[in-house]
Length: 186
Image 1 (cartoon, rainbow, N blue to C red):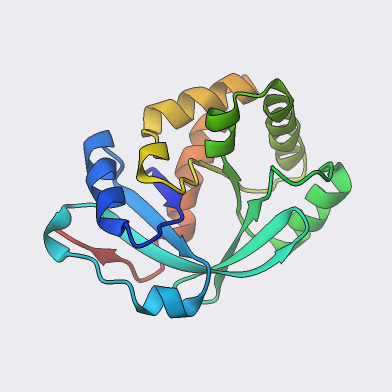
Image 2 (image 1 turned 90 degrees about the vertical axis):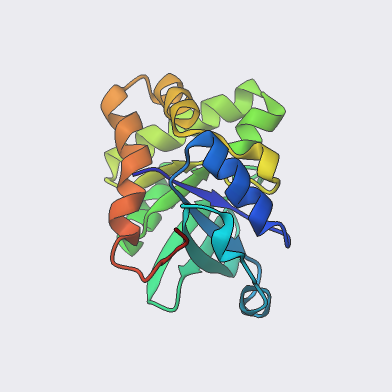
């Protein structure tokens, strides 16, 4: 199951509406602090999108550490916009932490820059080499940056040139989140 990642700003209902229209079955909302997360009020009648919640713990250079739910589950977000070059040393270090890594594709859609495309390609290859679970998601800051599963899949397939790796980048996130308490609004 495809799970998209987004950073809402008191617009969770709009994210859910657009996700429903795009056929996105689940969303992970990431907030900048726990205080904001506690003030979230989502209308239960908004649809059948499964929702997960997380908060940013800390930013370390090109990595953003995120705690998902109240459980001891963590994931890492690549800060692609960072000027530092991501090397195999960084990827090897991440592989030792054994957390899934989310690649934010919204920057690639918004900027349409060739250098970012090359960076993503390198990161996917290095993650595959060091067996790092790589997750592709839109990481939308605006509800209109959300993408459908097919669109994310096509972009990852274009970057990696491998169908199997594209499938794993979309489906592996579900396995990570399945044992976390989620809130489903049906």
